[in-house]
Image (cartoon, rainbow, N blue to C red; front, side, top):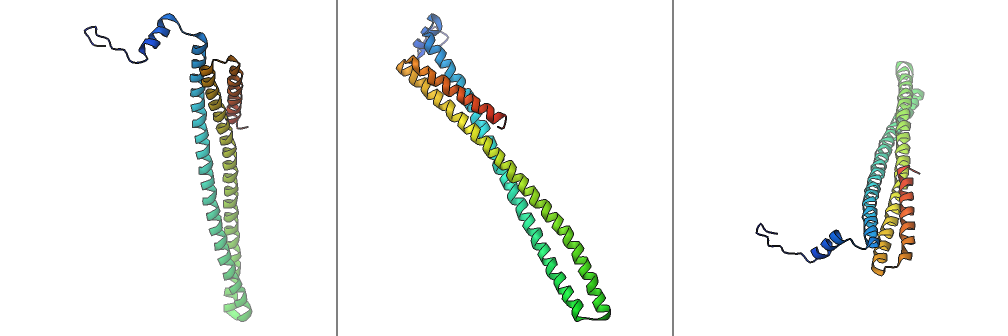
Length: 191
């Protein structure tokens, strides 16, 4: 529309104005609103599904890092065990002051190994905890994905209902919608 009163209609403007000024088919209007609501809820569910999948991947990555650190600690533990074994062999092969030196080394290696073992076990526990969190997030991701799929089915049924004007298809729209929202609630509650 220009400032001089000249008005150009787009291809659908007349129909939109007709529905706005004269009312439209209430069935079509209600189904359009329902479809818009389902699309919005589905977008939120899709976002939550992506978020939980990313969280699961981050936890899985954290588990891998902790497992690597634990493996490094166990390798360090093994190196200390090898040194302890050599010191124990040296005790049998030596006498006097040298022997006493190796006895002290064996005691030191035993102490060091206990600390290393405790660190390695702590890292393994952290890895297991991260794996468990990843599994929980993937379970919740499955809920969000299924909820989103059910809402997409409801939207498709809604479109078919509008095109065919078969009101009995509304049962499928409502059923898929209820199922999708219910599964989404389960995802939200981490069930």
